[in-house]
Image (cartoon, rainbow, N blue to C red; front, side, top):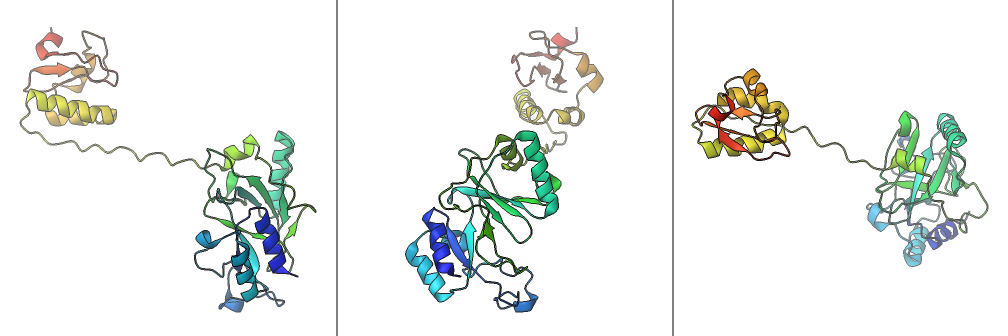
Length: 282
């Protein structure tokens, strides 16, 4: 099997390739670990494959002249214009089949792996697709930015070879992913950590200092109102909740700062009213 020819064919359609340690006829990895390797045929021969993966004919010829039997890895992600859905095993294939029944077929370039399927999709504009495991809590993985997959006809450690599912893999481009699938796999930034408000102890407060502190802290974290009230010497929380702004009527964040003689309307969309404490207690 001419692996150089196959690597060049893949590169000709824009797939950024790099060499992998191949699986031998004895189904062992050709790496230094040999029969103890836990990922036979699935790790790169080049150190910085994310950067070295290429479509350059000269580089590819150099690599496969040096390692003529090397497997073919492909860096997925925006630079290659493709991400891959990895259906690893019968359960994953069944899940995808059921989803297709619900949402409709979306044919695309595919590969038969050692135990499942790889489905190739064009990388979407304006959306991040990163490596992700257990899509929908199943053995369905995503290979996007920062990941790679193995290309045909590389030998799998089972002895089988990766195979294109159709006869025209280089003429037929990956399809645009359907919306339901993209919603499942697109990257969502984690929610911001909860805000932590450090409430200071009782100190001498001027009217301006108390006002600035109240505005800064209470807008960040409403749940800190009670604690801040206690530390600053508010009359009582119960009393405070009964007081409303004489201008806008809001009751949510009224605090009477002990010793300053002032109260301020300071909810999120505050009207900005500021007046003597006594004007609220009459």
